[in-house]
Length: 210
Image (cartoon, rainbow, N blue to C red):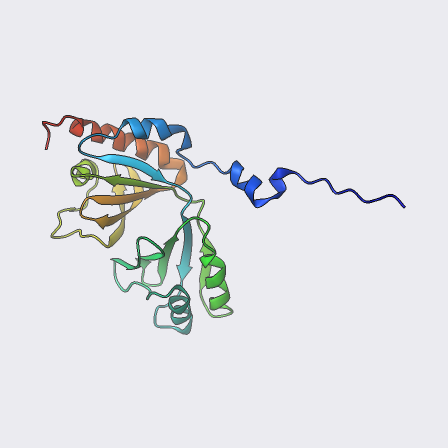
């Protein structure tokens, strides 16, 4: 009897699959680096895990999801629960939320298990958006060129995340700290948003501009 020979490809392994991943803004990496100046810095935060959640926060399903995450589901527009360095949950509607976690997180599977047969939904949306991080002393001024929200610190503070527009593009805008924001456009609009931000940043390239 002939010995069975199994031929495997590097692409059959997780490492091989990882090599195939390409972020929506990989081709602009050098351009983003070159756009950094004294006022603002822009880079892509690649491959964050994003999971859409649907559940009434006061229901058994909502409590099960909150327990699995280790953080309550946000109760109002703009509120973020959890941690920006780990797993965070954005309010998207009275029974709709977006969970954001580091690349490689299995939180989606854990949440689906926790939800079980209870009324609700857990949907992997990781490929739906990418994330741009804008930071620096002029970051808020850059955003104010095209965002209709009042971004003054008395209104928009760290720990706030909302759906809004940047120019003509719908985005999720999340403020991490006083000078750092994350902008999450859908992947198909990522290049437009990145180039828009680079153009808006150019004004602050001179050290004479505060």
